[in-house]
Length: 486
Ligand code: CS2
Image (cartoon, rainbow, N blue to C red; front, side, top):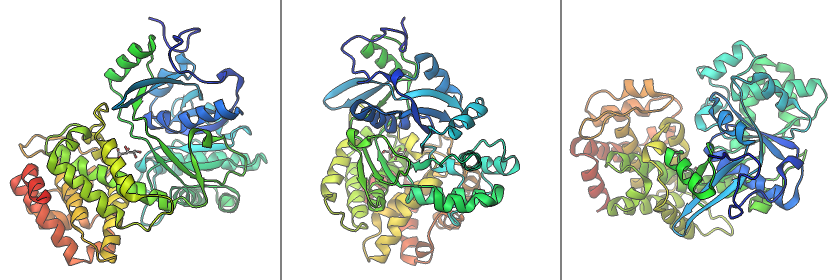
């Protein structure tokens, strides 16, 4: 069968780039070439190219896996995004990706792309754990494998911080203006965090560069949103059915998407507003809203839902007790936010419940449950501390935390085991011994960098989590859900 990327490979009915991809040069290097990037920044860039043109196509880089490049290169970077919603599925072919590389196997080409004068922006989606950030200090985490490797051989970097510092150093030495660094991960203050990560990395490997990074490089923050389940063989089969040719790089996502960005791009940017991106002076309130409401409710429903036997988020939303708990969580999270002019938090919460219930997305609770130690601080524990400060009920956050703690035991109520899939898996396994809820709480609460002191010092918080964890451990998640939702 014909494959996407060969001439005339598309039937006229399929939405395709509204521009000639080969007529546009590259301007962006994206690090973290996964489904989310393909469903989000690349789509906005595709819209920008259609609307205003420009040399803004993307060189996509995966840090470790050669697969994205293997899938995309034979297709000339083309791939299908299938949007799936209650009102049906639509296929759209994206032309914004010019090349796909892997930092491990194409190291020289990646460094050349990062150093090229035409590269004016580096966008990033490497997930929370990919930064190698020590959350307690805001600097590098010296136990992170990529940081360890890049400290040892900074001239041959493999990780995010090492690559960007090296590229900025080479550009500076060659008098090429620095690129703008745009983090698109679900971290609070993602621009400022990336900045402090790179400054600290430079302190270790290129001290002369610290000033340049601190004063000469822009790190706008951004809030990104689009629910994008991991791709399955069914995704590829559906793509083939919809576009009539083979596509090894197709992905699926909801139709909703949102991008709020601080407009600080000294060397220019694509017309992302053409795709609906919102440019604001300060992104933090939007980030907090999304992290605490969408991602916080997601994490809660992932742990509780997974342990209650629900494979997909849509199944969780069909469980009346859990659906009520999702609503309660969204309300509690909204209560920790300052009002955001022009944003109706009730409407946002209702829209989130509808998005979670999307019957056509197979978004696995187990996928969202991954990397809990990297997600809980900003999603659940920071808003819990804020609720405590404001004298608001802690129940929703205590329930979510208890569900995560129960999850760290690594086995279902019937004893079936599962992999925790967390970079701190060893710490978690060491903590999750025994059957005493209070002792389990204490060991997890003591993990460095996880629970803010405002919470560890609050006896009410401990009691609220431990009583729920105890019920989950003794009676199982379904019983705990019913008790909680009553
Ligand atoms: C999810 C997010 O897997 C997760 O942790 O909460 O990936 C979520 O789907 C996105 O942030 C939505 O924009």
